[in-house]
Amino acid sequence: MLMRHSISKLMYLASIFLIAGLFSCEGPAGADGTDGIDGVDGVDGQDGNANVTIVTLEYADITWTADTYLGRTANVFDMTEPAVTQDIIDHGTVLGFCFLSARFWALPFTWHSDGGTLVQHVLHSYALNTISLYAYTTSGVMDPNGITQYRFLIITDNTVNKSVASGQRILDKMEKAGVDVTDYYSVMDYFGLNY
Image (tube, rainbow, N blue to C red):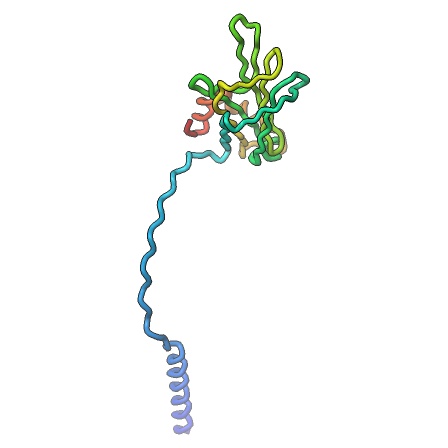
């Protein structure tokens, strides 16, 4: 019995050494590779706000087409913009601004010629995946080449009840906070965005 017990212990110890030997079989460690060259840091992006997408359109990128706006002859430009989603249409808004005379002005933008005989209009509208610009005068189409840039603020409010249309609610909320929604700089300050 003592012999059988000793043989069992011996087999047990041999099994442990065999298993330990299998797991400890490693070759010599290889040399570390050389470190790669660090890449160039990218340019910091503009500060953002989860509720606002800013879309910039340069005048040079516009190709006007003679068409109509509400039955009036006008220059029209349609821009594909995927940020104008169904959620924006149902629950958001798109504010438009144009850069003229060293500042941004709200769209619709209207100005009168000397003497007031000619009235000029530039405005925008939006639909699913599209922002449209219209430019016309009292006498027909207009090329507002004095405007060098357009900016569109595509705004949603994730805090509003999505069961009701909230585009006007967003504007109401901003106005209650003392924001002039026709003032680009006031709107940008409200959302904490750089000009």
